[in-house]
Length: 111
Image 1 (tube, helix red, strand yellow):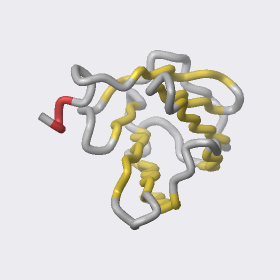
Image 2 (cartoon, helix red, strand yellow; image 1 turned 120 degrees about the vertical axis):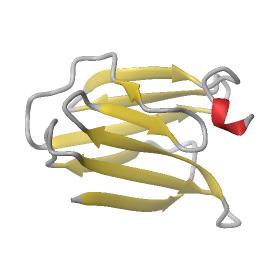
Image 3 (tube, helix red, strand yellow; image 1 turned 90 degrees about the horizontal axis):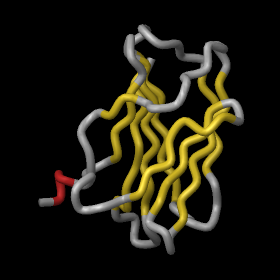
């Protein structure tokens, strides 16, 4: 099943999402951020493929997670954004899976 979540984006607040998808299920979770004018401000899609991956909206191709993907079925995701450092962190069940610095080279879709 596809899980879609559309949220007003407050970069000061972490986003918490729970899932019960497992690697190899080909399910995905899509979190899309909107600004105060309801324009898309970004987002992240997590793919539960054989090798779990993520994609930053209008920014990157699919990227394999570099951290160890949790084996538990029930997962609690926390996505945090640091506006000053232009970085995003993705946690799952308390473990850091990705610490991403947003850059022109990463966000090639905007070119």
